[in-house]
Every structure is written in structure tokens, then in C-alpha cells.
Length: 353
Image 1 (tube, rainbow, N blue to C red):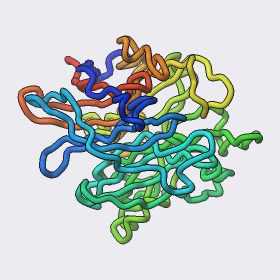
Image 2 (cartoon, rainbow, N blue to C red):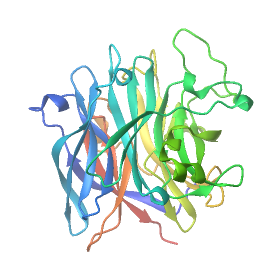
Image 3 (cartoon, rainbow, N blue to C red):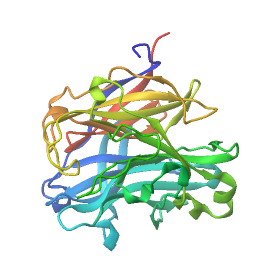
């Protein structure tokens, strides 16, 4: 829709790869971010070493009068040191998203573990953003009505809502979005019941709040799976996927997503050179986050600058994090990957009217 109530305005670049660091020689991209309890803004970039091997770093964002203006990497937060996190010709821990789940008092980082069977979702958690615990892979509860097991399929773009929401069975739930891909190497997989489009789309699943309060590791066993949003427009004709954690706004939940157009050669898990990634957004219902109330028919942000158009994979903007800052220029800022090589910032602005 052309009258979508929010827009994205470019601010600049806050991280480029340090080519003297072997962990960064193939790019820095697609970060998570959070405001630490002590007020610092932390960012967790994906760092890519030779051979497309990824780690997740951590460091502090420079904030100038509320505006993100720079970043200093401090350390490696997570490396692929578990067998299920690294494959034979590509691997690592990729594309983190970070949500503070308020009812649990828990920071939950989702990431993609690119292991022997391809990309799979996993959790890293913290109570204070200082110490972390690896909880392992997410295992989606099997549901007979789907006619298949979601755990058979690669899955990416996993992100939690920060608050409890109404669940499909009427209970208060915690919800996550994810993006299963109906691809199994060497096989023609059956699509879930009711799904006729093979393109990767955004799904939503749930965990009972009561179960998670009793044992937070219930987050590893989501259920109630259903498709939330599929490709609709030319700029997302190949596939769509989720972006940063949803933000509560007066209209419901503001949820940024990405759409892909162009041409995919060979396996979609191979690094592609003829694709075009752009960022759009949806408003999800506060009463049922599985319902899309509004959606951008055109991108809010598309590759236009040199850094977005030329890089490891050209023509990519890929939003993955949102933070709120204070100060003269404070507000909501989105961090996004630029051509799989650098990290940019855009401000989220409410449109006039």
C-alpha cells in the first residue's frame, strides 16, 4: 500500500569490514542489536571469514545526540564450535536477531546454524547481555494437520515478539516468526497441507506463556504453525522473509520484512549474484499477530547507494535489528546489511497524516 504509516530514511554506514581481521575478510552484515541495561547500545554483527564461514561478534555502537554514528567491535560472541553448527563447504552461525521477551525477563537471540543439513534455527539466551547460554536447535512440534514435519526443512529469519500475544487456542502465548524453505536436496518434498506455493514465505508459531514461565526452555518447542505472509508483489517475487523483532505501535505490530526478486541459479543456499533484496513492512494485528492489517506494495528501502549495490552480493538491503535511542536525534533506528559487506542505519519515521 502506498499510504503505509511508516517510512525508512537512510542515516549512514556504521560498520565496514576490517580486512586485516581474518574473521571479516568476506564481509560484515545482518546484525542483532540491543540497549544494555546500563544504557549502551550493543550490536552483534555477522562476521564472515574466508570460505563463507560466519561468526557473531559483539561491540558498542557510538551514539551522538541519539544518532548511531559508529561501531567498535569488542569480541566474538559466538562461533560454530558445535557439530550441528557447521557444514562441509559452508557453515557457521549467521544472521542473529535479538529480542527482550519481557514476561520472561530474558534476552533471546535467534540465529541460523548452518550445519551439515543446511540452515536451522537455534537459540542463545541471556539475563543481562553479559553472560550467555547456548540452548541449541529449535524443534518445531509435529502437527498432524500440516501433513509434514517442519523440522525436515531448512529454516531462517527467526525472530520473537517482545510481549505475550493472543494464541491460536485463546491462551496467552509467546510468538515467533520464521521462514521454512520447502527444499530437501535430492528430493521433491510434499508441501504442508493447504500450501500450494513453493516459494519460501513467512510463518508464525507459538509457545504457551504459562509453559514458558514454568520452564523457559519451552521456547525450543513452538507449535500452532501457520503461514503469515507470502510473496505478493514484483519486488518480492522470489521469496519473502522476516526482519527485526516486531515493534508495538498504535496500529498493532510494525514488522519489517525483506523481499527478493531476480534470478536464483542452482541451489538457493548457494551465494547468489543475480538477486535484488529490498525492505518492506507490515502492520500485524494486536489481537491476532497472525493477521496482516497493512502491507507495503513498494519497498521502504531498496538498493540505491554504492554500498548497497556493490559488494560481496550486490543489490542487497537486509534489515535485522531495531533500537530506540534518546537525545536530540533519538528515535527508532533500523540496522541493515548492505550488499553482504557493510552495515547501514535507517531511521524509522512515522509518515505525515
